[in-house]
Image (cartoon, rainbow, N blue to C red; front, side, top):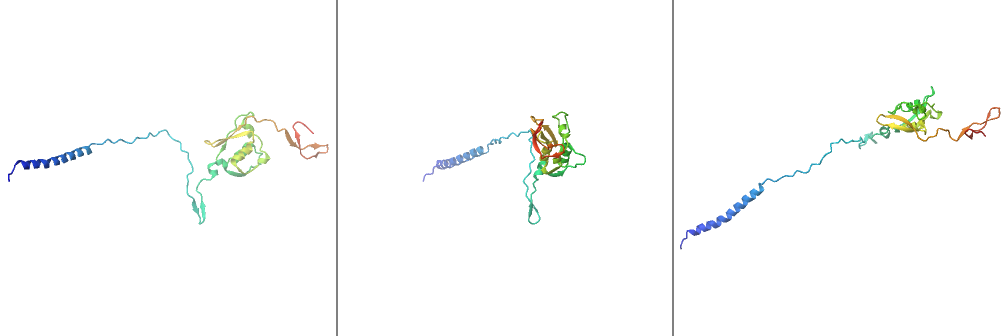
Length: 209
């Protein structure tokens, strides 16, 4: 059999060519995978630096067990959040003929609020209200809330103005309130010269029977 020296060389070339292609493809894949990838950071939201007011609100808190069968709420009561809704039952001392101002101070003595000082001397000044003698019907107040007690003492001619920052109570005269008395009043009409008093009757102002 004739031996050709070229046949082994051709065979080797045929075998080496696929191996070379596989090696080159592996290098290319390594080069591609080793390339650094650019990481894009997520957009950062702009946070406002302006201070925000956070109102204090009662948080939800669980009830607390008192005894074996009693559950007590740990939330603040209504009168603890709204001080003017406190229920009072007072009797104003009548030893020195108190004025409306003194009665108001007596109502506010344990409420956490204070009465505004008297200002102004005209008809629109609160000094007019403060100087009134306390009506007999207002010596006993309650059970009543502090807010309603102040409205009762002030009467319909005045607004109650509350300054929550200073916790002070002020009064402002209402506009358009007439300074005259009602058109009719109930009086005791005296008849004759013996001093006998008839039953009360409604008479117009400035007129008799």
